[in-house]
Image (cartoon, rainbow, N blue to C red; front, side, top):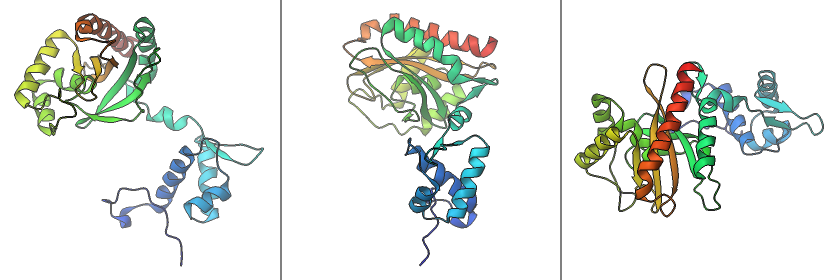
Length: 266
């Protein structure tokens, strides 16, 4: 019996609507992402269960376009950094990660705390860059981590600094469930909290998504004045007590403004 073609598409998609060659290509890319030391054509063929000729053509095409590198010594293929580069958000033609990194490193070095950069995807917040704390004890997030907008400082930026219509629509899309005992799950209380944050210029999180973790975040604006990202400082409550929010908030706002200036003016 023939081995079924691998498919990484969501089950909600009609299999008849898929492009088999494209599906196989993404299956191969995801397989290689799990093997940083690389795989040979034979190993990919065996793991994916598809024809070796198909794997050969896909790898040669991806190599020619700069997505794969073939090591002559052992004939293994590894991913290049091209996928990461094209996946990074652009604002006004500028790479958001590259423009934000210097300001984030400066603030991390000044405070020793972790900095993260996030963008909005629909009604969620997606982490795209992290500059880890200099302390031994730190919270590390995976790039690509998705969180709601209502229970963390990064996500609240996209609510607090949005226009009234957008804010109302996004709040309605949130399923307000408690992550900790501090999560704000009343819509009126959340709106009041967001409007206060808007007046301060930064949002805060007092252990609302993870118990004992505090965060302060500010908006990064794009070339048209849109909210391009949120820049957030995060650390344990004992190092970032509520009493420090005002001073840290000013520092985070300054860093976010510096990123905004780079996006607008280069």
